Length: 320
Image (tube, rainbow, N blue to C red; front, side, top):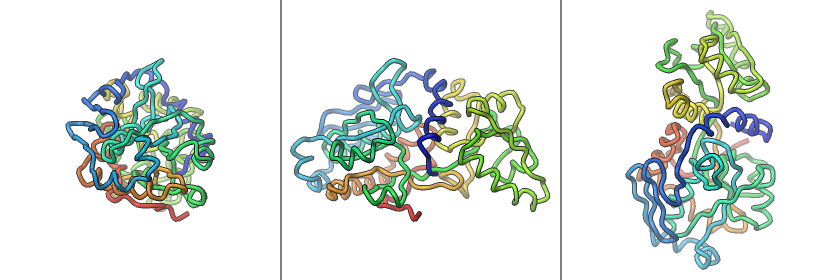
């Protein structure tokens, strides 16, 4: 799903409360499931999975990266669950992208060092050589492919958040027909629901009663109070909210097997400078190794969105 800067800001604001309630340890020391990383050439552990350097992959790195031992990463923080601060008031980072960076660094035998940047300025900063890559839940699209190369690691779109235990037995987007559903105004999710109304009418169930709210936190309150049967938001945000709100006891994430990454899913990629084709190749091969041994899925599972992990590391997969 393609996020505009304004979409991104509203999602961050809507989820700030849940993030503030959660305290995580930074991966540079230890995280909530025992994840640790040593210096360059060390190992990274997450959910019992140990990632260690692959000497053959290390040889693929550009000479400058091998010499420095560092891959410079730009990211826009906070944007849970992809990037967050480890605790309220802390400058230590955590999140899906951060953990994946540490795993890639361990596999390649270098350190992925993250620096916070405004989202709109990330790609220009990579172009200018200030950073080698960007890891910031960035949608791979044709426009961005003109200036950076993507190594795609997740596929994400819109998801459905329901009350804990899914009392209304919502299993697909079709189950929202004829029912009250919450969504944040001026989002891709509202466009999704509006576009689905024709299918609802044809099914004979009637159109969904779409309730729009200024913030997704308001939509979540409507769901909590039983005023709606579901809240439609980005799938990563839905998964993270289900994992963290009230200790995971407030909501559930609907998993539609026909839309594992979410509805209207599009690829998210690691943006690599076109000046560093060897780095893109090394990252792609390292990512495939993390897919093959299950590490990528474990990282995504940690943040409640295991289903968005890709099964093959592709390059510039977006077609529009």
